[in-house]
Image (cartoon, rainbow, N blue to C red):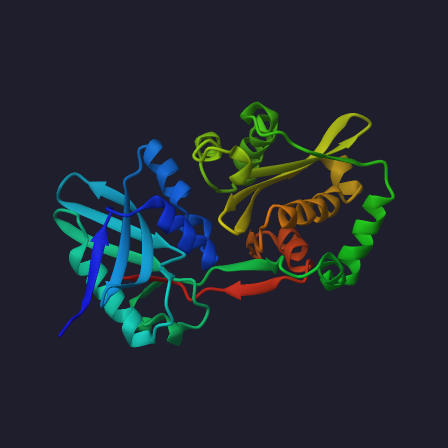
Length: 310
């Protein structure tokens, strides 16, 4: 007898946030992320999966529709598993979500699980349609001394040089206008370097999606002789944060500004109760310098298992 069922969309946001924080869910599974996407006109579905009345998983989907005849629902970096499940139990969750997807016409479901081992996903390898994604994750539950000792020697040396330079670190305010300049630089470097990321209009509503913007967004900038030379922006979700935007000019790079900014951000995020920092994707072929910077922090390189079509 199948005791598993799925509740679609009729879910308490506070309960979702509590479980998301407890299980260190990714940004793409944050309630505020989905709410912001809806504000931008992107359809969003949320599923809560119960087994014998016990919640075992929650999953947020971004939907692309073609009229009423076809749709794809993407669960990126999820589901968030709320109970320890065997691979065959996870497979049952995927099947039930696909079967009950509240979409009309032809329906496909894509999932990009957080598991790094393919055999732990609960899905057959032949269903994988996209290669694995890699990221670097820092455990901020460590004390600051341990975190600093975890930096690779060259990374730490650059940090020391930056600390001894004329750079001044400023933590940006909570108003959108105080980090709009950084998003303008981000837009320019996307256009010139062919970079991708969250749409620029995403950031302001995300910052305002909870009562206190301080719970959602954190930024730092480096000044040299009163000129901005580098900046970083982080999105906070539960007890985790994701490094989302970074920019530096030639002077900032010359003075290793990003090393100093990230170290300051680590300290500030720890003060705010963040236990895990996702530094974002690493691509050693296309963006080798950025990859070296992230890996140099000594964080865990996580290679996820890929994207699967159901």
